[in-house]
Image (cartoon, rainbow, N blue to C red; front, side, top):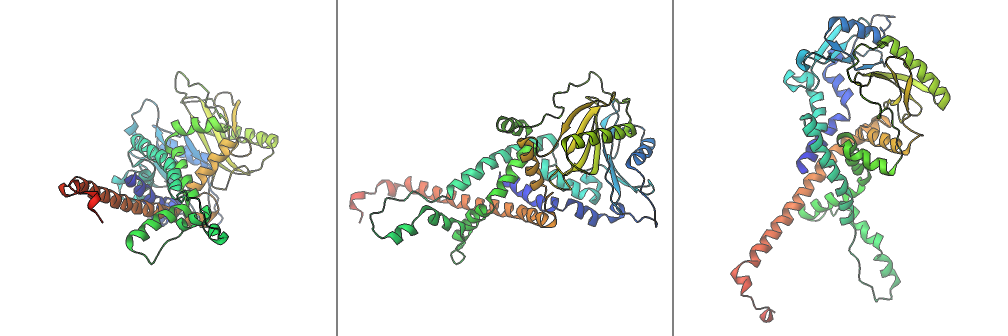
Length: 406
């Protein structure tokens, strides 16, 4: 666990500022300088242009939100029937004002150099850069970590105190359980290394216990849905959002609704749902296509989203008929979804702006520190047990007569 947590904590300090660091590292393709009064080309038109340049590729997800002075990234994948390695790169950066391709990369492939440094750190953080195997490994560690949060908190509780026979009320007050527990929240800075290390581990974990549990349990949500979903579903109400839709016998690669028509239909359906449910749409986020089920998902940011970065208000509709199939509202409908939305938003520092990003970044270093101090405590106890075991098995210990000891 220690090795995994140190890696996850250290990489997490960078992930909290992923977009900012990407822009700082590669302004040549992350930023663009438009001509005066130059308007941006619509994302669909840009995608259609890329489709002509990459005829073997398809878009399963199209970003819709555009920002002044920033490039747009498009993720592509090989069309069915083509090998996965048919495309050298799967992420393309485009100038939204001209349609010019600024850069390409195979997202997360560190062999391409520094252009993939931040994506590679992201892969390390979420899957050890081992994809499915790493995702499950970190998911299992996160599950153990979630349980360990409660075990660790329990171990800080003061031991039960014997019944006092004193009549001094002030002394009885001073020995109250909460007062004795308060010592666990403090660090004895003037003591030796061992005590300071122990206090840093214990007090450090207590002061940020709630956020540590948020990180642990949200990591289970990210990496081990096979455990997270059944547990949450058994306690809380969650929306289905098309999970029970059957897969088609054959991939629908050329639906009746192309991207442009799908976008129009998505806007129409979302507008209807917003009036019916009484929420306000802030901005478009993306449109996804699932060829396995033949459905589109149109996603926006609304006042039901936790923040402007959590774009999860969605409608799902048929790619052939345009019929509305499902609606997902991130909050106010199902408490299980609301809790999950908050867990993931806190983990990703998608709420409360820059202060939360700094806090989450610092939490990454704190996780590393708590892990290291915990290992030092474990090692010292292990060493002490080894010494005691050695003494007990020595001949001098076995020959001791306890009745002659003073």
